[in-house]
Image (cartoon, rainbow, N blue to C red; front, side):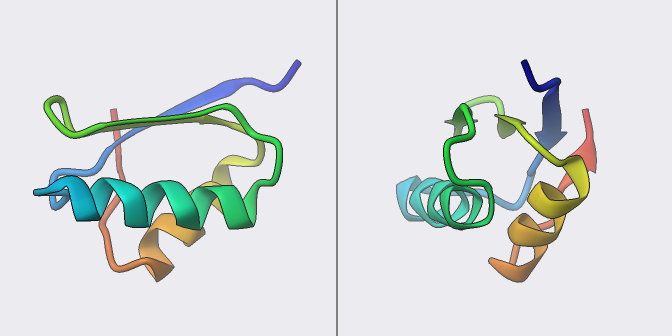
Length: 66
């Protein structure tokens, strides 16, 4: 079982942002458990932390340790 990574992504401001971050993580980490919550600006996922962080950055957002 993979460890869960949690990031705060405070520059997610709408439903479109949530979808963009989710799709980026799904592409970078196929089969990962992914949770993206707009209200708390939290993103949680299983899989390689560095790969997920880079996917979020490449999608145009700023992941921060949560």
